[in-house]
Image (tube, rainbow, N blue to C red; front, side, top):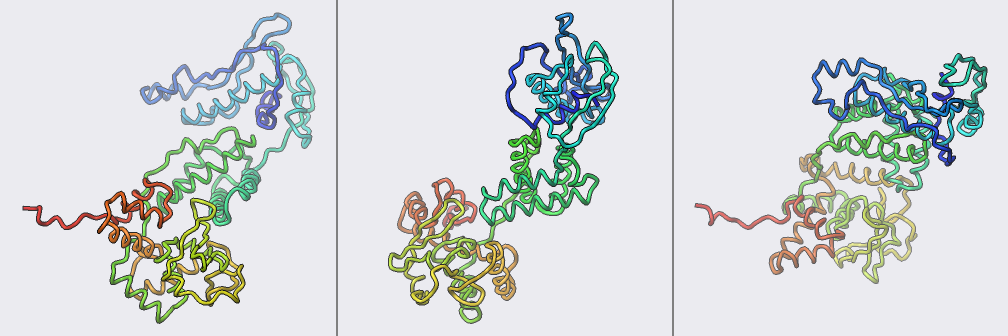
Length: 449
């Protein structure tokens, strides 16, 4: 492998500018004499003929002896092992971009590039190679020491990306994010390519295969979320020059039907609350915070004693759409609460055994605990996966809408609801109301003939 090719592998390791006199032509791509953008319009025979040819990047450099631009050795690397036109073209575009950067940094095929080598490579492995080079395109037969940087493995690069994200995402978000990334690395190790392979071996085809695997084993929503997390992490690697391109961005997002808990009927809600009153008072109060304060289950789990200002009738909760959300505490909730005066203000409001206590568990684990505990209730009433704790929030908002609309116009009703639900925009509230089918028309039987 020539010095040029070794430099291409490490071009992303430095971004400092090194102004040079323009003694070269900008690198171009040869694609078998066809326009790849019109590939689908070619006949099968034309496609096969084009893909059977050698594709490469080519450029010219000014010969210092003649002063003329002379064509240099074609740069192919591994391009012609790629069998599809689109992926081969994308690969060569990266090579073209890297070669252009190298030329701007000062690469000169007619002189010693030791300074450039030292600038681009860490002194890790010294490889002694004797090469016979074309005297018209490179220097004569040389014996040189090339200093090569060890490439990060996929696993090492992804660990770097995770460390970068740990201070950006919240605990629960990072836990989900890390889980998806770790599952991808585990999938790699169970397939032909390993996480111990160099990061340069990772490509769009591999990621597409993994996303197809996720789609086969779960739902489109999970596949799309996995795609988003992988794209986010790879963008960190691109920004830090560990990868050249975020090819996940070019992978399509699939249409996915969102999952939503159904609204409880009046009888269902009444039966569940009566059952909890007798069998599980802690989960009863938990659900009442959802019903009367219209909180999401995860928000209820975050509540600490100090978040409740009973005198001011205010509740402070960390919500998904803002750092801290302030809501009123309805008198119905205040009447249900115990005396907090002797309780530790830093204790959680809800724990497995008492109201107001310590609970050493992650946020997601606390939420999952109450979801599983409520499943006992669902099983008792024969409710399927369409119902859950979140259903109480949908039910309360639907009930409020129905009450407001009796005396207010639709716009007045939605304005009132926005103050209670915490939606940031009218459009967001309207979409939510449509999703839960809160605004249903009156009986129109008399209009039908």
